[in-house]
Structure formats: structure tokens, C-alpha cells
Amino acid sequence: MSWLDGADDDDEPEYDFRARPNPKANRPRTKRRPAHDDAKIARVLGVDRGRYNVLVGEDTPDEHRVLATRARELRKMAIVTGDRARVVGDASGDEGTLARIVGIEERTSLLRRSADDTDNVERVIVANADQMLVVVAAADPEPRARLVDRYLIAALDAGIRPLLVVTKTDLADPTVFLDHFEGLDLEVFTSAQEEMPLDRIGAALVGHSTVFVGHSGVGKSTLVNALVPSALRATGHVNLVTGRGRHTSSSTVSYRYAGAHGAGWVIDTPGVRSFGLGHIDPANILAAFTDLAEVAEECPRGCTHLPDAPDCAIIEAVEEGKLGERGAARLDSLQRLLLTFESRDTRS
Ligand code: GDP
Ligand code: ZN
Image: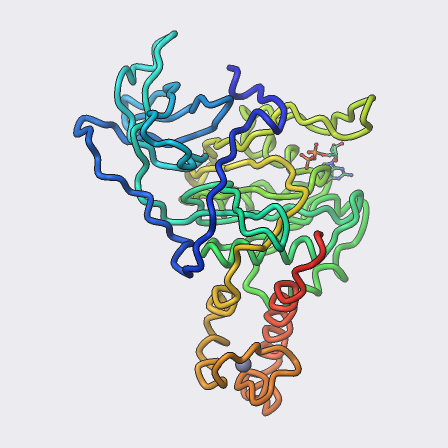
């Protein structure tokens, strides 16, 4: 199947749109009035060269895959993996047929990134995911807390629950690295060459749409293939010409996870090199720390909650010991994420 074979990064159409300075932009209203009452709802599994691979009749006896194009009237509207598309025309999925996407349903979440921090042109990565599994290696490549922070910020901003997998723990001990994330509500899994915690990770996938993100080389494809054997993601190939990893699957694709405890969706993304935060609203980061957000209601207007913020209610509560050690660790984590955001100048 050609869409599974993938191609170059450039073959994946990415639709840019200008961010509006609206905090609700995380849940953009994408609904268009259906002019087509007979449209079927289909899950967008993947996009390849302007063709969409969609799943019609999900979880019914009639479930099948269909190849579709987008209707011209949708213009440049982004349609991405995870979208729930309204499909008309020949949706039989028979060889040589092509259905047509005439609209998409309102999204529950939208994971976006900007090319860099000063850029507020966003790229839409995945729609309707409710979890993000961040994959990072204990070594080779060296883990960088700043890059993980950026993934976490993007997830929290989008209202997506983050999870963390540290791979290659056979190569290095991740304890010191993991100390960085002490104050977060972050489920952490560790994984080694011969000891992948597939049962535990699988259990976390059941009933969710989980987008997998990570720098290339961290072992994300190895993990996806172990969880979804039919995925056939290319692993560890190094291009002899460029010396870089070869990604025969460079587009974002959904796979159904089917484990002993139930099913879910795994959405694999190509190794993300940069994760600009140009579009992010720091208020969404604080909001993700529900316990601290409550305390922050007593903060002065415009409080940054950073170490030098005068009369910050969170800092005062921590200093007075009202939030315990846990609260102190959480404030630390919050400040680190906010600082990443404040100093949006370098790419990680
Ligand atoms: P991706 O670019 O993140 O998809 O990474 P791959 O899955 O292609 O893995 C990159 C390399 O790391 C491959 O050679 C894998 O065999 C290797 N690898 C993956 N997981 C582990 C692990 O837990 N331990 C060790 N030592 N190597 C691993
Ligand atoms: Zn404050």
C-alpha cells in the first residue's frame, strides 16, 4: 500500500494557517454545515500525496478502508491523521475507487507546532489525540530535558495527557534525567533492548488515541513495531550517503493497538526535529497544573509565577510550606516549563 510505504517529508501535505490570538484556538471550530446528508463518518488514518486513507464503519462489521480525496470546496483546510472526516461518493473501498472528503467533524484536540518559537504559523500534526507518549533514549542519542519539556508543553497546551518512555536503559541509567520530571503528573516507563514493558505501555493505550513523538534514533519505531506488529515501521536504517537515519515511513500514520486488555489507537509521527512553541498560550500551561492554578487565583494580575515574581501566591504558599514537598517540586516543574516558554529564542 503506497501510503504505508511513505516517501519524503515533502510529500506530506502540511497546511498552515495563521494563529488567532484566541486561547480557545486549541479547540478550533472546524465544523462546516454538511451539505451532504448521506456522508459517512470516517477516521483519517494517514495522508500521502493528497490522498487520504480513511476507515469507514469503525468498530462495525462493515469496517473497511477507503481511499479518498478532499473536496475542492475545503480549499486549504487542514485534514490530518485522527480527523473524523465526512465522506461521500464511492466509499466501497474497492480497487480503483476514490471517495471524497466533504468536511471534518469538530475536533476534541489538536496537536500543533510552529517551525520555530518566533513563528506563529502553525503546523497541524494530529487531531483528536488524548494522550502523547514521549519517547526519549537514556543514551544514544543523549536525552535532553529541554526537548522533552517542549513536548510536554505542546501536550499540556492542547489538553493532551503526556506519558514518558525512556528507552535504551540497557545503555545508561536514566535516574538523574528522570529527576527533572519529578513534579509532574507523568506516568514514566523504562524500556531496554530485551525488556520492553509492552504490557504496561499497552494497558495505558487501551481506550485512547495516543500520539507517539520523539527525536529520531530513540527507538520509537522499535516500540511501535513491538506494540503493533503489523505496523512495519522501518527501524535503525542509516543512509550511507547522508549518514542519517532512513525513514521509509515519514508521514504520520494511525495504527490500531489490540492487546490482551483492549484496543486503542497508536499514532506514529516522523521524528520531530524542532518543536517551536510560537503558538502556545502560557495560561494553558498553568491550567494543566490544576492544584497550582487554584492557588494562582490569588496572584496579582499578570503574575508570571517565575522566581522573581512579586507577591506570587504559589511561591508564597510553597515558602510557607502549605503545599508540602510535592508542591515545591511541582512549582519547580511549572517554572521550568514557563521559563522554556519565556525564553523562546533557541530551538531545541
Ligand atoms: P526511531 O528513529 O526512534 O524510530 O528509532 P529506531 O526504532 O529505528 O531505533 C534506533 C536504533 O536503536 C535501532 O538500531 C534499534 O535497534 C536501537 N534500539 C531501540 N531500542 C533500544 C533499546 O532499548 N536498547 C538499545 N541498546 N538499542 C535500542
Ligand atoms: Zn503567581
